[in-house]
Length: 240
Image 1 (cartoon, rainbow, N blue to C red):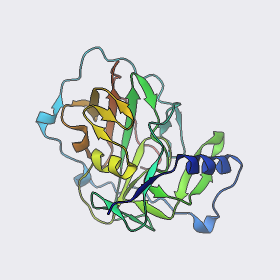
Image 2: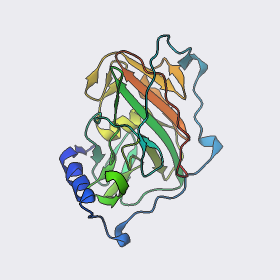
Image 3: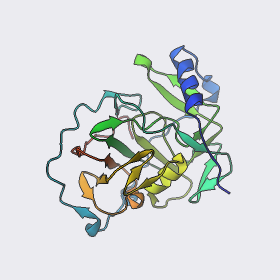
Image 4: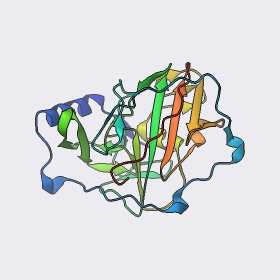
């Protein structure tokens, strides 16, 4: 049986502690290892799932300020509160374990726009409380500990999905949304309804967004409604 929780209030309280200068003791922090830069981890997308980008796209504007992972955090409201799995439960075969799993460690970036406006992907998706919080300058923070970590999770609201698994397998965007506990489909992203335009590494993805493969330095953008925003690109800073 799959069990997941949403804890927007808990994360808000945790963030408040971070801003007040309270954080987990160094002995409790989980170190984030350098990513596994394995070329075989780069997903292969069938050519039929990609198409020429639609006309009339608008500029994405500023991607935001660089966060603790040296990747931009949009100045925007979040898509939905973070959700997580309870310890020793699973969804889509993805477990929540007490330690981060580093056998297969790569990163994907997810960006979401709703009617042309950016939305944040929240920190702590896939990380169960109580949370360890590392306070950073400018009111930013990094979630560095929790009671368990799903194999797909986020540490900051920069959209970086940490894929940290004891096995190498092909994960999908649908897997991540299942861990998050949010719906995803051709007409919905989280609580937002409308036609979904998806981009995979800058190209229009015309298949079901739940099937988008995620992996090493993949960039995924989801636009709900119109206008459609031209796909962003980042350089994956911070050793990711």
